[in-house]
Length: 193
Image (cartoon, rainbow, N blue to C red; front, side, top):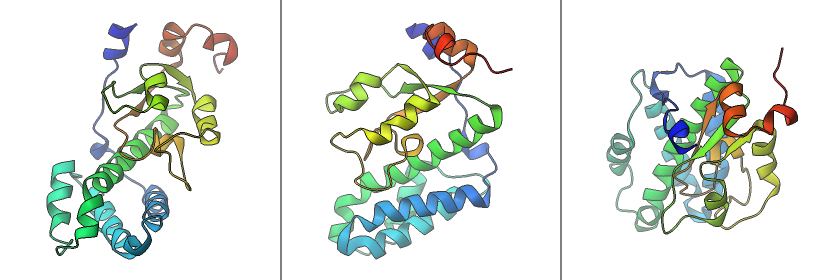
């Protein structure tokens, strides 16, 4: 099974033309997250706008490019610096996950592999799911679960996956591959005609 999961091809979400609808969705989602930063809310909302504009450039941006550009906007704000690495990782991951979701909707994909690996700091939520195949319905049900690291408000399972600073993502796969990796899905979610 591990070999099959490794064979799933990756795509570069920067190559996908982003719609204004997706851009607005990401801005709204990031604004909810930024509002949870208390006194830093305004600063993070401005950084969010700058980030999304940068990520939506024709050639996109890498995480390191994003961090380098935004570093100049921080102006020695020690409170912002404290959250900076996590926040830039989260906004970049949100963009990547939302872009992947747009593609999977266009392709009609209904199943995903929870990927990202295990490390010492992996949350129990992610540990239990890593490498497993899930249906869209199962993924959306995560919104009703509770775990350390899950955003208190505005959690979107497809965008936030395991929560704050999560390195995991959903790799959307075909029905046939999902049925091979998790045979019981064929009965639970029969092929669409």
